[in-house]
Length: 184
View (cartoon, helix red, strand yellow):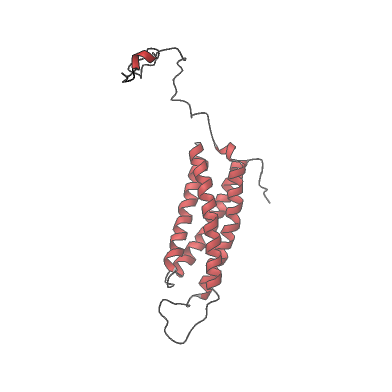
């Protein structure tokens, strides 16, 4: 049995992204199954699509983008997706307790109780995995940021050297830029 090397922080984060991807597949299928639910079907499909986009974005940021803004954006999105998974689990868990009624009630449906329970179960598992992911990227954010290429565009000119990008590279003279005054 293979063990996970927890000293490889980037590998641990990639493992958690893989777990999210594995859980998002059945969650997406369940979302499409219950999509006909009155007043809530579109929300769960949108949640599944957001989750898949989040997993793809997470993979890209961890593997390719090393800028502080990208890692910070990922942390913010991870927190929001964790909360969205919690809300989805609670909502669909409560909806799984619905009762069939004999008469026709507008905007009420209770046909896919098993599907509602499955959505709640997968959303709960995703919530737990996303807590681990969010904690890992917050804790190991310094390892995700690569500062080597951040300052490549800054020229190596010293403070006193003229800058060819500026029109007037002479030293600042306040009298040169003084505005006429009406003071007596």
